[in-house]
Length: 229
Image (cartoon, rainbow, N blue to C red; front, side, top):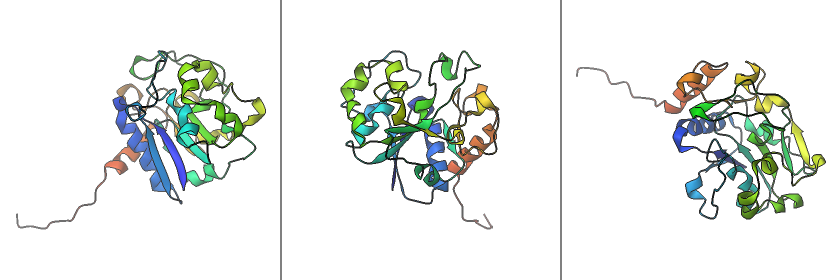
């Protein structure tokens, strides 16, 4: 079974559910899905003031939530799986503390959804899809206290790890269509500037696939009732 933690923002709950549906719909193995909702994390107090969403730092609690045992996957909520997540899971490397896509780009947009600022910084979006080796000794440093006190730069750049402990995933597992354009080979699509549920992002590249997933999420088969009425 794959333990998957998904970022949850109550301002855009629909994206969590669409993301979860895309995971379940295509997975060939059992999944355990956990929304990272701040109201459920009573042991953690979010004091950072520079975040654009509630899970921007709680994602680093995954090793603690796993009891520093086994592996787990974290993904942002504004994502859509286009392939079986078991294929991503199969890329785990026990010699690494984390595994992620090593994006290297400068954003084209100064802002993103709900008026949030969108700045470029080193290792931007590396932490949006993370295979966590929770049992790796280096990840023992990532305690709730550390997460509460550390800066965004320390956390998102994985500064508690040596560079050789940060494994690399293929970019198809964290494709940014609003930054890079459409990609038929993408396996995981990340609407990093804003999910298509927001009007201003409703027609970004690959948005049609998100809208389809939302329809599938809301679908309910019906018994056809024939007249008379």
